[in-house]
Amino acid sequence: MDGFNGMPADEAEHALLACCGSHHWARRVAAHRPYPDLESLLAAADEAAYDLTPGDLAEALACESLTLLPDGAYSAAHTALSAAHAAYESRFGHVFVICLDDTAPEESLDQVLAGIRSRLTNDPDEERILTAEELRRLARGRLTRSFRAAGNCAVS
Image (cartoon, rainbow, N blue to C red; front, side, top):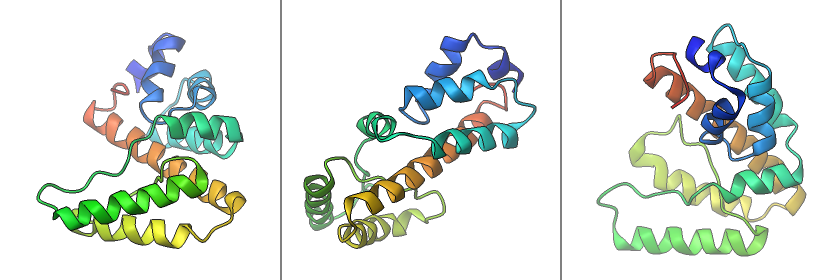
């Protein structure tokens, strides 16, 4: 944590952008340093995520990529996932995001397809709220993995 807390603000913001692509979010989380521990950082990241404006959300979504299939997935799975992503993007104008941190790898394709199918019926305002929540969960997981991988020294 000391490494992250001691970084210059622009370096900390750059590191945080790997967890969530909103510059407003990254600036806000970096500005509240120092953090005594990972839980405090995660709480601040959550709070900043709850305050994302539609513009902040769009900026963060522009940095997200499509969900990847596990190695060895059948071509039919690729086709189904591509079609589902296209339908979602056509309806909402941005990439589909879902946090799969608590999902076994062999279940991820089913979770993504089920998530897209169920969320396609949402109205745009409802979907914006769900998307923001998924981005918050993604950022939280990325921060946690990054700090654990770096030995709690810095976001990588």
